[in-house]
Length: 305
Image 1 (cartoon, one colour):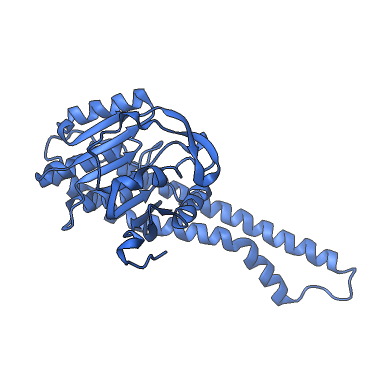
Image 2 (cartoon, rainbow, N blue to C red; image 1 turned 180 degrees about the vertical axis):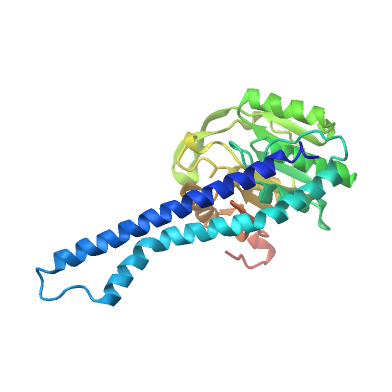
């Protein structure tokens, strides 16, 4: 089990290192803020009056507030790590067993973080089980959700769109090694120039020619691709293209919303009505944002945003 959970320990150490680094940066920026105040005070000597104490304090607070907020967020993440690690251990024992077969490292490179993966697993295992899962981007989340479906033993499947042929094969090999091939399918979906009418542009997105016709009324969409370097709003097309394949009440989970472009994608999604179905933000999990697909407006429901 230790090998299988090495990724979460690695993430905790990385966060600790970042917190230490952030503290040093905060101290440096605080000194810079004070230096700016001194310069401003020196400049003001040519004016009728110098800076008052309250003005000095306001300048310092304004300069260091963003850094302090960032440190506070890191501290909250570090405080949360023991709980996340314990929950991962419990899920690993529950879903994988005693084979000690390692799962992919969480939070490294492009992998989803532990809190997001735990949320996805809990949604599959929960009372209102989400049995049909669609992914934009394969990897650690594919294995964990497939393992959760196997544990439930009452059907369901993960359909994962993957643009990188090499990475798609890596995910397939990982599924085989864990005996999860029956619960997940990685679809080769290279990026092709796709018209995005809602943005008034065209950009690279997944080729859906290999999309299985029987996938309708899916319960959960996890959007962790394409990579952000492919377009400014690389992940925006997921909702207009795939929400028609989701049922009312399905969840859309967008990863990496700690980044400004992904946050803008969320804002634009909330402004959409895909076939008369709005999306509303439900919660934030780790660095992911969770949205819910509303009922069609012609069903008499009042859309909420």
